[in-house]
Image 1 (cartoon, rainbow, N blue to C red):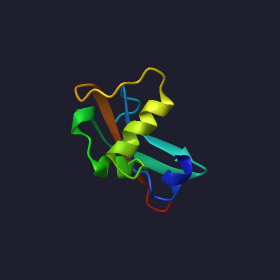
Image 2: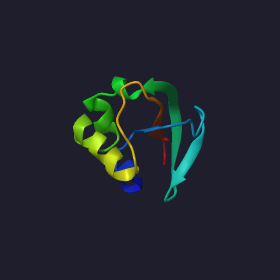
Image 3: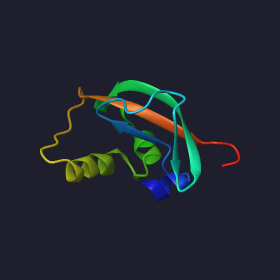
Image 4: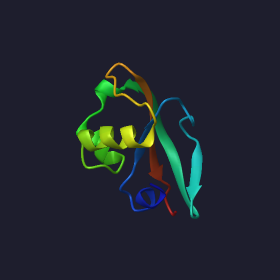
Length: 92
């Protein structure tokens, strides 16, 4: 995922809780990114576009990824998640 962010293929992540506020920055291999949006959503609100912004082909592939990555994960459209959208900083 780190390489995909550096290449611009990953521009957001959804997590079960908030990990950073808007305006926070982080670095990957000397490249700085800023968190530009943080908001609560449900899994049922996610779209193919969201999956693609996370570096996955579509929503079905995203569901499969989550099921492989997390023991006992079961997709529930009502489950809360937090969107963290980020952008590469100018000159970085």
